[in-house]
Structure formats: structure tokens, C-alpha cells
Image (cartoon, rainbow, N blue to C red; front, top):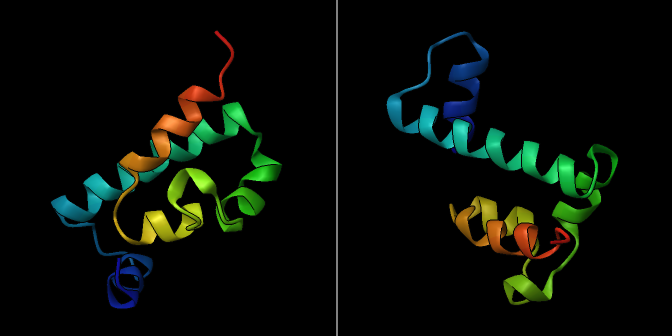
Length: 80
């Protein structure tokens, strides 16, 4: 989301429907990551280049609006 949108939200404005959906997706992703790699490791993982994303970082994938690409590595790393 844009810096302007973030500033609007921080000022207390309710999110638009589209922004609300994106925030919900990011919240679900954060919860899933915390179960798999732990809350303390999420920051490092988000900023580390990852071969699963073609050398991009998970943060870059999220910034591109491609959070769906992150789910496969999460599920593949969970033992059956």
C-alpha cells in the first residue's frame, strides 16, 4: 500500500474494502509464519533472498502484491 494510504489509516480513517482485504491477507500470512518459523525469526526471513521466490525476498514478494506465492513454501516446510 502507498505511504499516503498508510498515513490515512494511522490517522484513524477506516480502510477501504480493498485495503481491508489486503490487511486481512497480511494478518493471515503473519499468523501462519509465526506458527512455522516463530515470531522472532519472521523479520529476518522476510528480508533474506529466497530461492523459492526466484532470489527475491519475501518482503519484495509482498510489496509486489504477490502474497499467494509465499503460502507454498510455508506449507512445504510443515512436517506431514
